[in-house]
Length: 294
Ligand SMILES: Nc1nc2c(c(=O)[nH]1)N[C@@H](CN(C=O)c1ccc(C(=O)N[C@@H](CCC(=O)O)C(=O)O)cc1)CN2
Image (cartoon, rainbow, N blue to C red; front, side, top):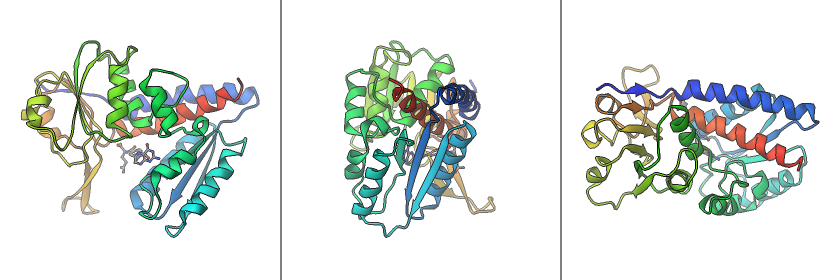
């Protein structure tokens, strides 16, 4: 079997078109959705993602602005900026790009963002709402994007064995909450594996839906995948590659060449989950703006 590709780039483009229509409707009602993205420091990958977010928000008709701060910015200065954005009525969504420099505690920053402007869905209030199935919060963009990919690719999650590898607060844990809930893209039986899991392959081989979010390049190989499984690769790793002009290439947590021979559907890296993260961010920002209309 050679797996069908789940084209995240194309699905994200469709969603961004839908969002642009929502933005136009909101604008006609006098509300232009505003997204403020904050980047602290000069991490090259973060700068790329932030640039992509600003471009996508402007293309959708939003007011997108990036605030770039030096790596020497103190936590107090960053919190003061968040405070200012919290009080700015033109800003409906606030996103502080992660990772932050080591001297800044990400949890403290996340807790300072007003939950109704937390379009990243990282604030404990939004995480709690997700867990108890309330739909008036914001869901973390990457796991929300994975659910959207599954639903729009016709994958039936109901009663499926879903195995997630990775237990991070921004992907693994919310992913489990979404897959288990009783809504579209949910009703799965979920297992969360992590670095202490014994016999990882025994779990992954049971999965009808396998979600790799462990952050280790090409760790999941074809022999660890059940024939016919749907494989979603959340990993984004840069590995040395002398054949590339820049000396490196991007790859996921799944060894694509062997997995594609076993799975029924698979996401590539790049072009899979990544573009969905940005599409979901735009969707959350539109929702934040809509809610100001009551
Ligand atoms: N505040 C946040 N910080 C971070 C998040 C997040 O959701 N909120 N997620 C990641 C990075 N990320 C968004 O910020 C992100 C990563 C990758 C992509 C993407 O589209 N990737 C492309 C490839 C890009 C390339 O060529 O370098 C793809 O997969 O096709 C979008 C967003 C950590 N930080």
